[in-house]
Image (cartoon, rainbow, N blue to C red):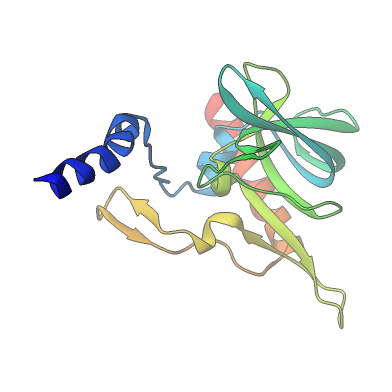
Length: 187
């Protein structure tokens, strides 16, 4: 009896916080869907980030230098706001949100944020890392979500898929075509 009481008391804090536990499920978005749902698309370079408390949650505001704009109008620097980050000794991690490293470059699909600045459309779905082959200098893009299990609504199963190591020129052409198709639909 005493062990049951001790076990119940030990589990009580976990049970109290159970309703607060959330999961992130990503649904595969095509380039056409990303382009249609974005206010802007840009190649950016990570400049700095700041995490802070807002309404009881940790948010990170990342400042990017805009290297190239592929859709929309952007200033030379933009701020992107995403949930999660580190404030003091506390870290909040939200699966599916892209994380950036100082100096790294990416192509991001951007939506205006109600809190100001932008957010990344589709989180990991709308973030494509740029890497350069040190030997050849060829740049390729890899979609952040290509490593995640993403829910396919048609088959109702999870798959790892997405753009991996696509030459940047081909990716630019695909974005331009997706943006043009979206503009055609909205006319």
